[in-house]
Picture 1 (spheres, rainbow, N blue to C red):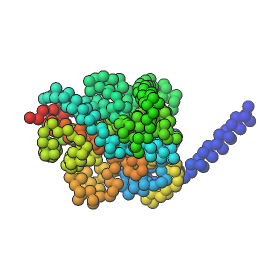
Picture 2 (picture 1 turned 135 degrees about the horizontal axis):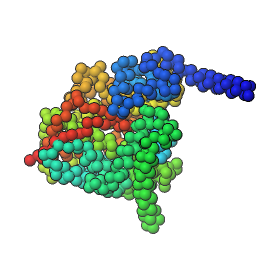
Picture 3 (picture 1 turned 180 degrees about the vertical axis):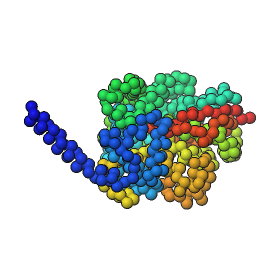
Picture 4 (picture 1 turned 90 degrees about the horizontal axis):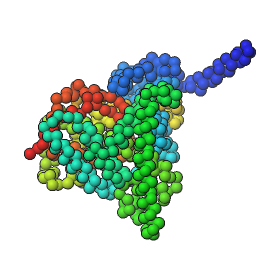
Length: 502
């Protein structure tokens, strides 16, 4: 018995030694790089024991205290924190990086790997195939009638709250979700009329748990997660989302089969399929038929990806912009004057072409995204050794790129970096800054695939709301409290008072 125990201890020692030896580059770099004190097994995870309300402040502390390139440990995982445009440029434009392991938590929600979490050749294939579905202007312009209908519904509902003070986020969220569901699946969810709210709640609950698992690694342990109070909520939410999308997809697939098997029509009517399909899932189905390596499961996963990535980012940005306009009436009137000049009457439909003329409104939205980037943190993982600054970063290192801190660096944005000022985006100011100083949708090959879609929808909703209402608020900019749950949210909510314009 003694020999068995002694042998087990020896084997454990050898395995531990081998494990530490394989990771020696991480330990050497950790020793030489500045960062907070880390403890065995938990690393710096103890810093995130508090609620998500403190996460952004804690991560910002890394840059303030240890510089623009520092290290910390999340459990046994070694991470490097970056907040400078120079270092981000090196990494984001490099062929030696993939998305970080943190996106595995998102793939669990999606039911598999999609654009948000795929790496390597699989990601390149999906990105190439799906790029035009949300970036081709002809397809985006075909959504104008949908956007116009949903925005008019939002305005009619808000008119009923004339003179009242309330949280506008839930109204904008319902409108944005309707738009995304309609352009993604071709279905009218009627969320603005309080139908299918269970689905919207499921999305919010599921993304909350994903954020929890990301910065509190003990919840990534299946046993701990199963024993927690979040397990049942997470399982129920992901099931609702997956069942909803699968049901719609199967219906669309049947319609597609009937259309082409019975009519003899060609699947390839033009290069982009624009004549045949006007929503994302239809185009996914066409790709699954015409392209190798893109199957029905891929279609469902990518449809969920577009749904989750689309409406929450839109709702958050629009709500933030409206709240900031309510806090700054002088900027609100400039936006209104610009809209009135471009769109003299309410009978004018706000189209994609018209909103491209709203230069001041565009600057205001960019300033909103600077101070409140919806995705404040992104991660990348080094696939080979990479030189950043004075350090040689070993393969397998995961990077935390803090867009939130980058956008508030006083060395870039001046002494008023934490204040709201659309003039930050005057042409003369933009040309003086590093090209990677403002990256709300990331940068490089792995930037947000829905960038053009988001730009159109956000400007359209903001312009339409300001054209119809005056917004005021008692909230103070300096008193806004932020929390992180994959996306950046305001813990205060978006409390505004709304008054109809004459």
